[in-house]
Image (cartoon, rainbow, N blue to C red):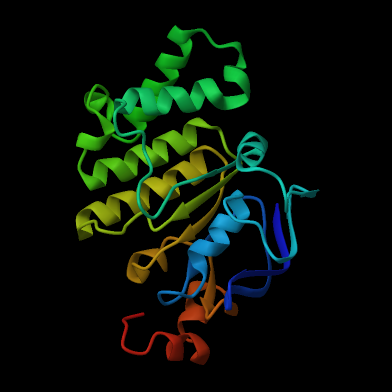
Length: 241
């Protein structure tokens, strides 16, 4: 479904993503791990179109999207969440999801009533229905992260990019987010690339792990294989894996 070939991204003299090549198959849930500064979020930004590579090619469902705009990729079926939630703060939770639905391929000729009903369905899925009239900026971090997932899912993506959905959450909240991510992958036939630092949860939630360090891929395999890889252990010295 998604393929990166020899992708490189530089910021001045710093190489954030260095000659990265890998594939993500339809239906996979792939964990993307690595220490701070490994290039994980930069890679997500390259796939979603927020950055363009200096070198290399990115294809999605066989189409070269290397230079396509973010809105084009969204319409093709790529949605994402952010490390720091980027909601429309002065809009309610309902309106944040509703605008995603109305912007999806021109709203698919939905009436406002139909779009609102669909938005409330997604809010209910993430336990936010009772919070629909609360401004996004007034939600606690946990609910902001759930709302970002609801908004992304409302775009009806084929590929969902998740950037540190557990950051700042307590253990119980992180466990719930993990269960929801697994659930929506199964129920909505999604392919997911998931960047995360909470490895103890991620490793038991994904089928495949790609590890990065200094912009390069240093391991790619099952969670068991990657967690035992000497290069990964060295990269995480001083951190629990």
